[in-house]
Image 1: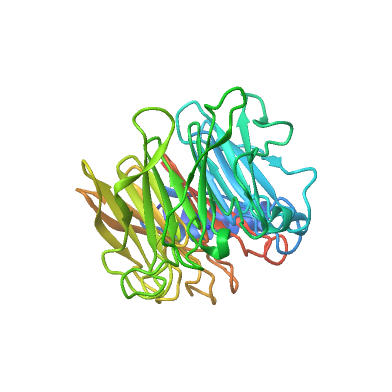
Image 2 (image 1 turned 90 degrees about the vertical axis):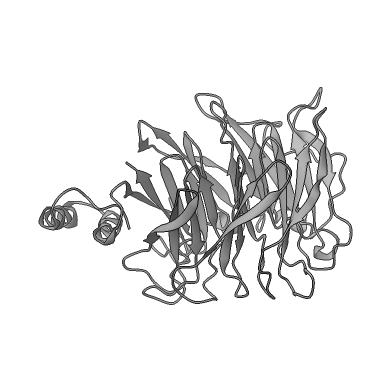
Length: 430
């Protein structure tokens, strides 16, 4: 679903500045850093809520490299932690507040496994399952882990570790199984873009197998892929549709313009099949567009990122009775074609967000993210989100997630707790 300001307050500027002075004397720098950004906001309904820095100090942790959020939890990947063994932190949301984190790791992890490179969480009410990719495991063969909230704690859903059983599929070094993951209720979609010399492949697992649930169900492959197409670099799944991005696929005469392939749930049984539409392309394909590098779907809405210089955009599609049709192209409101707009995307209801982690706001590649709102069927920019005092290569907006009243933005190269230790910024709809 993805692979990475503030609302105007109803008090006077004088009162806000007084509050900042109080914080300066009594609180941590990170809290002050975030509240200063609050002075530049546009919209009173969305407000800055909290910044969370990497809980572990050190270099190259990349906390916030990937994020996910639902009605009850915020999930943050830190794939660089512990020499790239990786970790995932899950924060509960209760009564509108964010609680202490639960840390997930793999006891037998090896250097370079990158557990937490990709995370996803269920959005269905009453279900809290988290799927975690570890694409570097076993010489980049990859692995995927599944956990569920039992009301008291997060528990592995498969065996003692949560690692999915891959019986029925053949993985080899370099496949990068788990490079992308998505989950909807009891269906898990997993991309392995390194398969067959980067042609790529994707798999569906589900919880309906007997006697052992959470096994491989079907393989979603495409013929005609070329070396390097990277099919499976991004995925998303709903109860009815599966979307698989091949961002380096060529369309017509355009090199690496990108394609998203569409599958639908069979009406009988648990199978999945290609739709009559088969694939989606940008309405204006370009060389080096990377359309399909990020995907987020909700109901009859589909958001696709095309973050490279050929497009530097995000595209909105809506489904009619038979097809997914492009309804709007969202270009970056400011910045340059090399900003990576659409690298991280999120969609929920009448709001969507897109990150531009290579945008130069106050430093080189410090990054930005943009929030859009849908009114009368049209998406319009609502906010530009930034950090007040960034440093070079922070990559704010490298990951983005939106659900309900929460917006989460990853800053995987923030240096607050060490070089590239990472952080996440959280915003709330009041």
